[in-house]
Length: 588
Image (cartoon, rainbow, N blue to C red):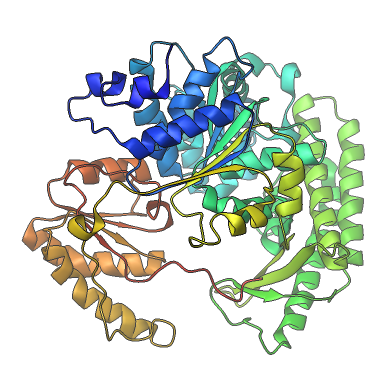
C-alpha cells in the first residue's frame, strides 16, 4: 500500500531517486494530515514554515487519492496565487512525482479562456485588417500567423512577444464571441482542446483568479469554466480573501467603456467593426454613446474634485471611498442599452455567422457595462463597499475606475466554497496571528467555521543560517521619496558585494527598479556580475532560469518575485528589500 511515508520518508521513493534528498519530518506530518482530510472529507488549514516543502506535502497525498480506486476522489484542483509557483509545480514537482510514484496520473495547467487565440477570430481579423488595425498591430498580426506553425497550445504565454491589448482582444477566445460546435475550427480550437485535457486530468493546476472566476459563475448559477472537482487545495492561501473579493464585487472603468465603443467605431482612426456604409446609423449611435460616457465620467471626476481627500491630480490610481450616489448615470445607461438592442436586432438580420456573433458579442458587452455602471451608481447593496480611482493622463483627461467589493467575503465563501466542496485544504507559511489566537482570525475572515488545523515550523536554523540587516537613518520614503531612493541606490553595491551578486533585489514599483538597473549597470559590468531586470522583455520564467545558471547574478524583480519562487543551492544568498510592499492603509 502506497502511503506518504513510502514516498517522502527517509527511505522512501524520492530518497532512493535523489542522492541529495533530505528527509523533512514537518513535510511528512503535513502530508499525513492532508491525506487524512481528503480521506475523511474534511477541511484542513496548514501553516508550514519556509523550507518545509509544502508542495510535496499536499501533492503526494492528492496524487495518491486520485489514483486510489477505492475512494470517490476523481479530480483535485490545486490553486496558487503566483505564476512562479504554478511553473514550479508543473515543470519540477509534478514531473518528479510522476517518475517516482508507481501509479499513472494526469496533471494539466488550467488557464482562463482569454489566454487562448481563436483561429476563427484570427482569420476574420486578418480579412478585416485594414479596417481594424494600424501600423505595428498589422506587423504583429503577420508574426502571429507565423507563430501558429510552432505553438503547442496557442496560448498568450507561448508567444515570443507581447501583442498590443487591442490586437489580442480582437483574436482571443471569447465566450460571447464563440460559435462553439458550429464553428468550422471547433475540432482544432486551442481553447476547447485545453478544456478536453482538463476534463481528462486528475490534477488541475490553476491560479486563484481563475478559481474564483469559476466560483463566482457557479454562485450566479452560470456555467463554470473548470471541470467538476472533489477537492481543492489552496497554496499561498493567505491571499484568497483579497482575490475572492474582486470576483464577488463590481469593477468598471471609463477606459473599458471607451474601448468597447471604439472597437465598434473609432471616429479618429475611422477603424472598427462598423466601418461599412450599411452601418451608418449604428456609427452615429456609437458616437453618441461615446460622448455620453465622456460627459458622465467627467461629471463624476468633477464631483470628486470637490472632495477634501480628492487625489485628482495624481498620476497613479488613488482610491476614494464613495458613501452615497454622486451622479445619476441614467442617460448613459439608456444610450448603452439602446445601442445594445440595435446591435442585437441588426445581428439577427445577418446571414454570416461570423458577422452575426461579432455584433451579438458587442451587444452583450455593452449590456454588462451598463448594468455594472447602474449597480455601482445606485449603491443599493449594503454588503458592498464602494470606491473610485482617478488617474490623470498626459493629455489632461482622467481615467476613472469604479469598484465595489464585499465588506466581508466570509458569507459568500462559506456558502459557495466550504459548504459546497467537501474537501478544502488551505496551506501557507503565514496564516496564524499569534500563539493564543492561532488560526481564528483567518477562519473568521474567510468564513471557515469548522476545520482541522496544523502548524509545523521551518526546518531552517534561522539563528545559524540567516543574518537580518536593518539600515537606520534612511529618509522617509513617503515624504522624501527621491532622497530615499538615492540613499538606497548608494547602498546597493555595498550589500551586493557581500555575496558577489547571488541576490534578489525586490521592488514595489517598476520605476524604482529601472532606476536601480541603470545605477547598477556600470558597477555590475566592472565586477563581472550579471544583471537580470524584470520588465526588459524576457519572460519571467526565463529570467529566473538565467539567474540560476549565472555564477554571480542579481535579479531585480517586482510583485511576481516576492513569493512562490524556489532557488535552491548557492545561486541565491542575499535578498535586498528597499521597501516592504504594504498596501495603502486607507484603501477601502
